Length: 245
Ligand code: ATP
Image 1 (cartoon, protein in one colour):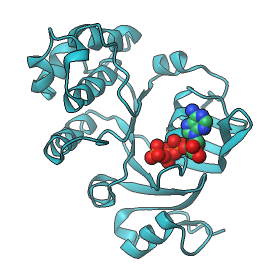
Image 2 (cartoon, protein in one colour; image 1 turned 45 degrees about the horizontal axis):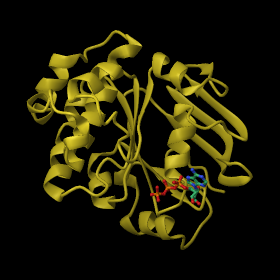
Image 3 (cartoon, helix red, strand yellow; image 1 turned 180 degrees about the vertical axis):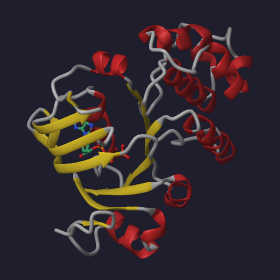
Image 4 (cartoon, helix red, strand yellow; image 1 turned 135 degrees about the vertical axis):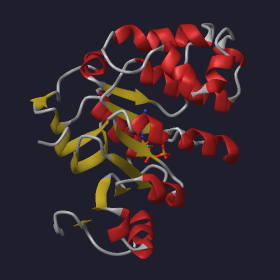
């Protein structure tokens, strides 16, 4: 059984439809990278998986249960946590207080204040600072730490590298193996294709609200990925299942 199963999913904002007939499965322990141009629907898909927006139709199943109608705070308790684009920390709270908010789901697991401080020493150094005084990279590190504090089984990372200096991005990516070695499943939205192909077990590419390509990086040519990214070429190709539409 897949940890996450998205079927026939349509979603959007009011009357505006941003996702069309998405089918996607993610296995336990997998790192799936979701790529695609601006506006392709990556954030909308993560928000729908996290329960921040309700789908127009279709289903989201998690660990075998249909969670389509479940609100986001319930999903956090069952182990799905989103680090949204733009961080969204509580600006007047300190770093440590923000982390403790993440821990309020009280799920069991390896992540607590000291584990987060060990993983992200930069966060430990800032623990008593108000988040409004942090740089973008520091905020991003705290946002990841806060998500880990809730001990998710499925971590959704939306463009963690957006607007950050390359050296900071490198540091954030460097902690991914440590996060994964404790069994976490990750869906990562990323614009940087090279970085994505280097870390992902599987890549799914979105174009104009549709999933147009999925497969393991080793099985995809650079040309297939860039064609899917920019919209030159075929309908849908999944190198795992052999499905083509
Ligand atoms: P980006 O990298 O720019 O965030 P994305 O692939 O994550 O792109 P989405 O943010 O999911 O794409 O956007 C998909 C579509 O939904 C776009 O047409 C976008 O304008 C629209 N959209 C996104 N957020 C909202 C919102 N809050 N209200 C209305 N429309 C939205």
